[in-house]
Structure formats: structure tokens, C-alpha cells
Image (cartoon, rainbow, N blue to C red; front, top):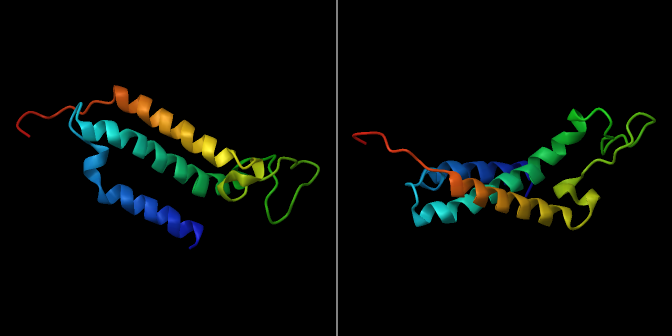
Amino acid sequence: MRRRDVVAAFGLAALARPGLSQPSAGSPRQEAATPLIGFVHGSFVLLAGMSLLPGLHPRMASEQHGPTPTRQLEPPGFLALNYGRRTPVSVLLAHLVYGSILGAFYRVRRQPGG
């Protein structure tokens, strides 16, 4: 399976479950959904965001051309594994914690008559 297929699957999964992204305020589904949203975001960052980083950062070498005198930073590679085996795990854990904290403060307002 290609990386773009995995990213597309995450995007479709997020669209397929709109009830998870907008639960009623304080519901048990909300507490369960917020770490899931953090996991989906962290997975997207690792799969898509890190592969785009060499094209955006002016001092980062690409995987095709390697370092030059001005581009000395190592590219992150697939799942940012060029930065160590623990990098994907720590990125996902940080996004899970962030999603949980954000979800603790997130409340959906119901519109009158709806």
C-alpha cells in the first residue's frame, strides 16, 4: 500500500464518521473521540506532513539529491524514521495527549430548535 493511499484512507475515515467529530457536549463518545482525532492528526503528520517538509524547509536536503553546502538538515523520511525509531511513537503519543487536552475543553453548542 502506498503512502498516499494510507493518507486517503485516514481522510475518508474522518469524513465517514461525522458523529465522532461533533458529539454532544460531555458525552462519553466525546471523551473517546478526542484521542482518536489526535491519533488521526498525528498519523497524517507522519505520513503526509513529514514527506512535504524537505520541499518547504530551505535548509533541508531532499531524499533524492542529498545534502549540499546550504542544505545540511537530514530529511525525515517515511514516518520520520530518519530521526530515530522512537520518533513516530513520540509524535503519536504527543498528538493523543494534545487531542485529549483539547477535547477536555471542547464543547459543542446546540442551536435552538435543532
